[in-house]
Length: 403
View 1 (tube, rainbow, N blue to C red):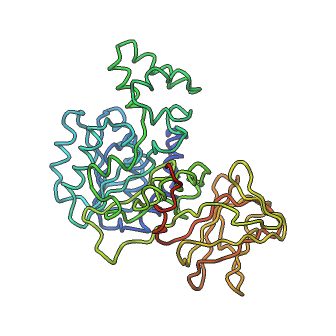
View 2: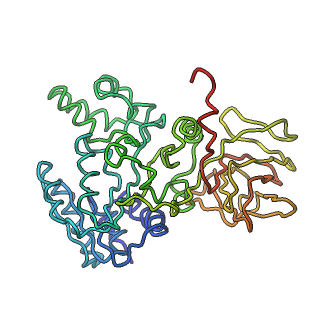
View 3: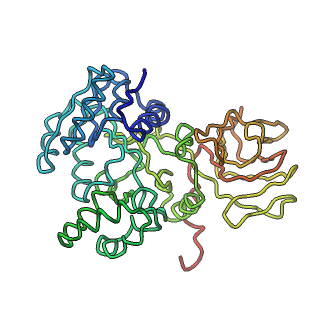
């Protein structure tokens, strides 16, 4: 369908990313056909238009009349007759959403939790469990993780999203993002409370702690995580994520792996997953050289450089039939070779919308294996290795003395 030239390029970009990445990722794990979605914080409707095209009914709610008016125009231009958009003030929105009790299959929280206060976040998460059908799901996506070091979402400097508001309120001026600094400056003229509210509304980090307060055992409800081929085009795996994954594996191996990513993307079931039906998530393998490997070296930024012909042995914590790889090479589609015993496997595909490295792909093995050898025939760097399997149960015992 031809998009209207009246729509802002950033709006169109968000629509395209949601269509290409987010919707397929969700539908890989839960059905949308015939379902009712409630999108909390629909804004100008880019995400609404992407998801409504796949659902039977899409309800979008927000507190901003101007934003919703733009969403209504976008929905009308696309002829989406299954969309209902509602505007309520902050003081009423949770209670009004509660009126949909028993009608909702999917609660969509797309890039919204980071803009809520702690009290509002907990209210929305608990509301989700209250109003949903028993087989319903809560989708949390494109939400900045306060546990990763860089605030890519708002201030674009390290750690501001993880600081207490009192500290962030005294430090935000160091951000290189002029529109953010100007907005907080203007709010601060009204006092500390106004400044802090502005910081929260612009977006602060989110982590598993809020979910544990709302859900208890997060792992028991998690059906999808974000080390996922559908998301790699817009979520290339970063070195700091692998470092955080190692910390969480040591201290909280019970958590799903999404909590080490810069952006939290996860799907939770309202009811706990039945014992025996727990999904196997893709987990990152800690990039390391197990011993001296001819032609291989560990670079200061965490990549493993493999010169032509170098063979890197990889021992995984659990057998897997699905190996995920990130790499940098001159020809990524023919760059990687995986040896499994006497067999050699090549990577299925490489997806990267931006056309810049690192490249990500998936290697499917005919039989599960926990030992593979990776080769980059023309040389290059490995940036990420992931496997579909369980966390290492011995990980908590691997913490060095004094941790």
